[in-house]
Length: 462
Image (tube, rainbow, N blue to C red; front, top):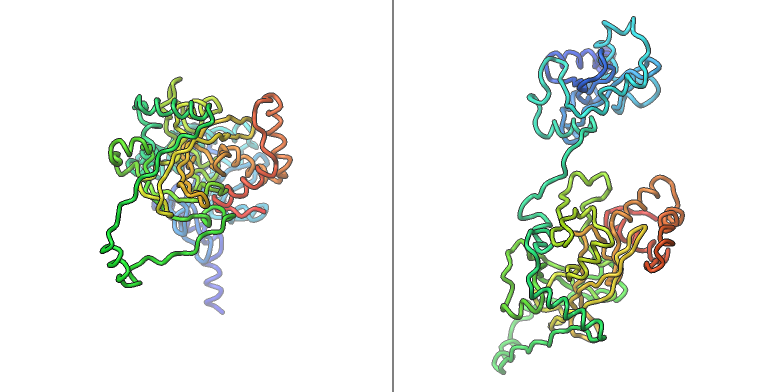
């Protein structure tokens, strides 16, 4: 029984608070003052603390089982302490080590102080001038780069967008879109020829290649080959399969080639960073885009590369700023294209190039565009390589319907705030009344595409 009493004393909140104050003196736990805050400071950032058991500090770092963000503790307008830690916000006036530490640091002035005003509490809360450590050390010098970034986010400091990560970045796989180079003259001629073919009702297709002739001796040896050396045929997806369940195979593709350029050069001469493995589906499949969006939430935007689209005639534009006029120009330049296949389709036939009329749809506008697809010459299967719109912030639902991802994310955020899907969609689509020439999709199409997009994000929403 005595051991239990001693353990309860050691694990009590007051005992943990005393240890926390001691660790502040030793420099293990740190306290940061927002720059240009009120004097004396009414708001502090403190090292996180695990209140379980005897309690232990959680150093500043990316949140996990060991590290945590700094907690914010402050005096509110009624003279009570508030804290952002799990223990401090359990109930009204719930005790935590941060509140005890703040009370101890405020002991010299709190008795004769007046209640703080809203203006006083706001000082230092949103300053962009940095942070200072209250133990005399400069926070910028003593912190790592990651810790400075995390504290900057906590203090709502402005920060630049993430930069290109090199050869593995998605912008390197679309050189014609994001590099300084403009498309070659022959590419523009191909686009013009395709445009004339679409106007006259003739689809631009490449002649099928002749298969290599096999001798009788080859087929005789092939028949003698053991069965284990032959690849087993996996069951084919059903015609109405969606998403990853509709994959008929994978082929190597290049985002900068076309069938014409590959035939002219005898192959692809671009770098390995521009080659990707693309899924092969049927031409009528829905939920064809499989690349998981980089931005699961709109708040993730600063963490990902937002490159300039340099091919536009009016000047470079960030991907996040693309509008209907920009997609119209990209369509005219032939940049809304599926990657060119460098291997034969699963059926063993040949690929042909096809331009289809499609629409890019946002919550308040839509734009007619032309998209290049590649499909096989089979009459009964039509294996197809579809456009992956992730690099341009698009979600390709099917061969004729592309959505701006930001609009789908706004729908998701509205639903998370308790709004109905129908009301959220109707509010945004009221803007279509000003553009009678715009293509207005049905609520059912929006609903099905949204559910497929949320599923791609890993969210299960009814």
